[in-house]
Length: 230
Image 1: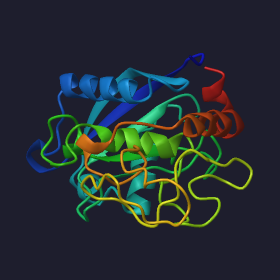
Image 2: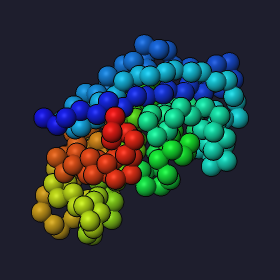
Image 3: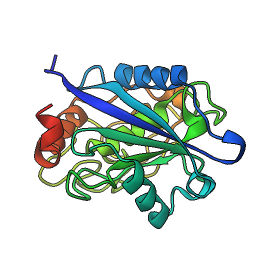
């Protein structure tokens, strides 16, 4: 097993009209449990550091817009170099979540935050994305992972030229539902549809690969040294 790095999570619940989008402390705790279960074979574990709730109808619906996200994160972010900031809201364009990659900005930039559809948390109403795996997927991006279908059937797939991920077979396009046994590329191996970095339904998603785990270590050590140092 790898040595563990504890990542403190600052959870920001953005509320819309009539407190739409509120998430109870218990459900947030459950979401952190889902994260820890998914990342148990990696170097990372997560602990809830803080919860705050902010009523702002404009932020709630338009949180995915660059200007709004920037304003929201500037106002609410807790030390992004040392904390994972999660903003739950109601982006109204079919978006489940979004996260910048570690090299997108300097490590202390407020824009290092995850946007999360409030109803994708465990027991939420965004069926079949209602088991908390949207956050698992977005945290993957936050720690440096790409989609399993990145670059389709071409090198370097879901890795980088300097750090390849050789144990997730190439995949031509995202998976929806749970099409186990699907094979969209001529290279060896069936599509990794049960990997957290695909688009399959939550009940289908089960794992990160060993190379993905190593890539996260590499990315965090390189671009999030404060986090890496714990």
